Amino acid sequence: MNKEELITAMAKESGLTKADARKALDAFMNVVKMSMARQEKVALVGFGSFEVVQRKEREGRDPRTGKPIKIPAKKVVKFKPGSTLSEAVQK
Image (cartoon, rainbow, N blue to C red; front, side, top):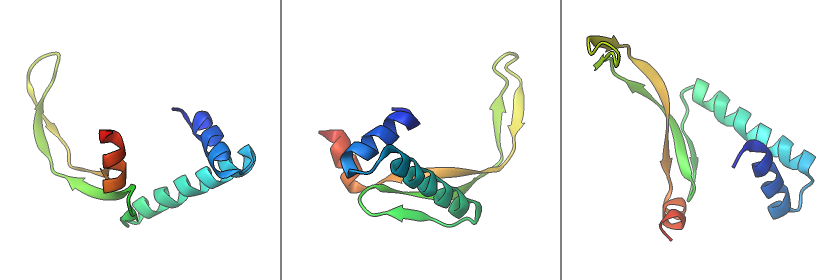
């Protein structure tokens, strides 16, 4: 499902217009993005949680040469699904 399909589905499910559904989705994405930039956790009970975690520096291999390379430490966004979402996927 791409963004346009998601907006259409949200509009149909909620009874909003597509324009309002687009605004709602854009607002949600912006709020999550700003929260992640501030290192804040976003938890949606039943759906899941987003948080920023620090990945340590590690050693990897160059796929072309097989030589070891250093992969630098970095921050990444981690999503952990909630119980309701996990159960829906298992059905």
